[in-house]
Image (cartoon, rainbow, N blue to C red; front, side, top):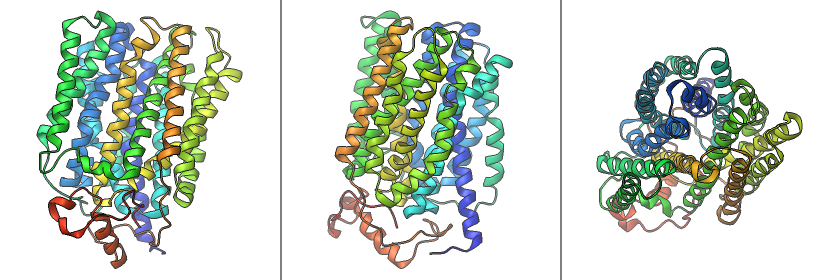
Length: 506
């Protein structure tokens, strides 16, 4: 189907907005790694402070990203995205002027709340304006640029740390935020999802469960498991999470609709996400700290290490995203994490004296190829398996899994590398990272199912939830309704979905 030029222009605009909105969140999350030693030198606190500067953001991001997905479905994609991008800018400036460690940690936590609103709404916009192979390609482009932000962040952060101050790592967010706000003006109707009510009880229980558990994991490195503040926090967190899952089966509009995990590719893809993103958060975190604190790299030099990864992502992510839309995501999701794992295994040869050309460069290239193979097909497989009306919560669940995996692996850093990072601790971290990636590839190989060939074509921009779709798509929506976990409550007589693993929306 050929779209009129104005419709294509709107699609391009939506894609740029989605990329920029997520770009700032990924840029900030990755750039902070190279700033941690400088922050610790100025504000004190050592490794526990460094962990909390990372995890304060990840805890609130992971805790509130689910309710953010619900808010996106209830109140509309653009509205929630606008609130999130504005709040993220304000919190970034507060981080930049933080006078104490506590102030910085609190500001990072609030920044995570705003960041939670960005990714689900931005991906939901893409799902609303694209479908089929075009949707997979758009997600591939989104993946490429957000992946570039995640990898280029250390480079940009390193330049700021070495030439200006670690505080400029947060100030830089303001520019893409202003551009995003400008592009959002006059975008069109505020697209809503499947509706419902906001699950505040679930949000509170989820935040307490995750926050208390991660607090225990981080603090045990300083005071040990026998400390009351550690084991009490751990027990509180586990109980809160148990009550959270029980409550989500009882409320009418749950923050985490557990029925969505009945979709085969959705739950398998999220298991793979947990393994892969846990590795991607942990590996670069430890490697960056080692290069700066042990190998003697400057922050800028440490940031340059992953520039080849950025280039590979930029070149290949859209390409592999398009291929996965054509041939199915399974082979890409299986091979990609294993290729990325070889990049971390390669780093086992480095010592306190590091050779960039023979040790770091090959690793960075392998890492980039592995990420390019993995991320866009993974995202397409997960979001393409559910109905477009649930794009907000589906994206939120997937991103919550990724962030929670990251904060847990970072919280375990002290246990894995020891109290002081050295060559032995680095080797343990690299082996754990590679093992997680390989496990993610094996899960995908065994569990992901390629969708059936699609009969429909891409819908033009503007024909999302707010404009309805053509008659064929309406019949397909009725078919896919049974996958959304509301069958028994709303249309119990309609029967069960004959294709539980689903295919991407036509």
